[in-house]
Amino acid sequence: MIHPVILSGGSGTRLWPMSRALYPKQLLALTGEESLLQETALRLAGDTGFAPPLIVANEEHRFIIAEQLRAVGVMVDAIVLEPIGRNTAPAATIAALRLVGDDPDALMLVMPSDHVILDATGFRAAVVRAVAAAQAGCLVTFGITPERAETGYGYIAKGRQLEGADGTFAVAQFVEKPDPATAERYVASGDYFWNSGIFLFPAASYLAEIAQLCPAMREACERALAGAHADDDFLRLDKTAFSKCPADSIDYAVMERTERAAVVPVTMGWNDLGSWDALWQIAAKDPGGNALVGNVVAENTGNCYLRSEAGLVAAIGVADLVVVATDDAVMVAPRNRTQEVKQLVARLSAERRDEADALSTVHRPWGSYRALHNGHRAQVKHIIVKPGGKLSLQLHHHRAEHWVVVQGTARIVRGNEEMILTENESTYIPLGTPHRLENPGKIPLHVIEVQSGSYLGEDDIVRLEDHYGRV
Image (cartoon, rainbow, N blue to C red; front, side):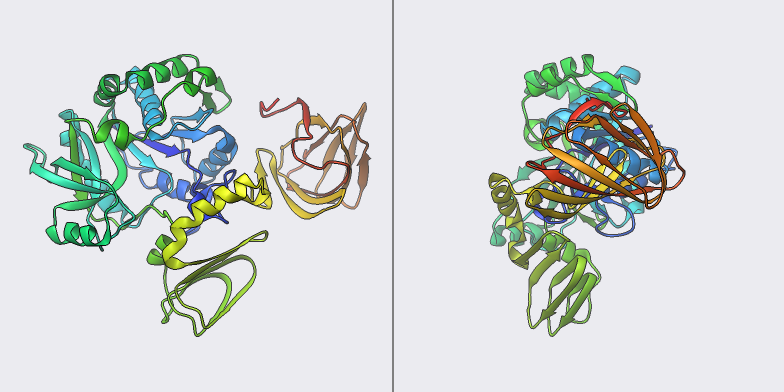
């Protein structure tokens, strides 16, 4: 039995403005109907050789992840919550420690949650091919047969064929992102592969390497897991212990230093979606080489990626551009410079721009809200509460609120009162009054909220009681 471990802690800043810190790219449906996380979980679902996946995730995204997995019918072993990001090596260490507790011989298939694999059958075949080497104690990675001289990926050089493990080779060398001439030479040799960041490890062997190569990491992870506590569907790591864990990637902490590294070459339509240009490469294109997604009209354009999640995007006479429009931001860049979007997001964060972190539609465990207007001393939101959902019992020091029910039934607590409101009914929440909004019905509750006051930030929320453990 192979245990999939899905890592979902990234922020995907290179795909801004669609990917935001509070709703990163793995939670977006960028290439189909399902999100990248859902596609990753479904890739091995139903195969008898694979156990239910173990998810290691950012605490901020926990409810969205749980809801997305439920929506596609994926049962999980656990969703482990990292209180702070520490890169992939500690996440894999936590997963390995949990797995060996139940099965000392467990094999763990470590996968990022934000990659595209077009040939799932080829992927499963490569995993099966890697089992023999992993059972012999090797730490196996998957090398992607290069389609071009790509300078945005690291490379793996294969060494000798491993005995008793057909199609598996010792790793001769890990190579950082090369310059164009070096990349051309790598591809021509046939001995170099793109580094996919996907691994098949014997959990015990990985832990032995971590103990030898980075003992402080293993010790911190052991303490964090020992101090973990269950919270509904989640397992929360001990924050104090995990915050002391060194931050490092699996490649740097282990794979580039171990003598057990092996590689299985594979062709499976892989892409890590590390930029908008990467999305253009795998997208369906019109005769002019344009990938057009959403409400887009293009005239005399060539080799562009044009995407609208809101109003019309119209382009005339441009080439090799990326234009992505959401309802609160528009990003324009040359296609060959989309790797620099990460620096743009860093600037937005430094300037404390809301657009760096959250979409205009913000998801919460009880539903979502969307900002309709944000002006001087006034803000308007469209709140959607799913059936059975309830907001926290809370109060605000700096704002009052007016609620108008436009669909469904609302149960409202306002101070010592409790009331039921239906369509076209409204109420007023005075400043400083404890209040709660709940949907007791069977259809989504839609409410228009008008806020007024001297300060309207989301941090002016004092939670007194919460159904979702956020107090």
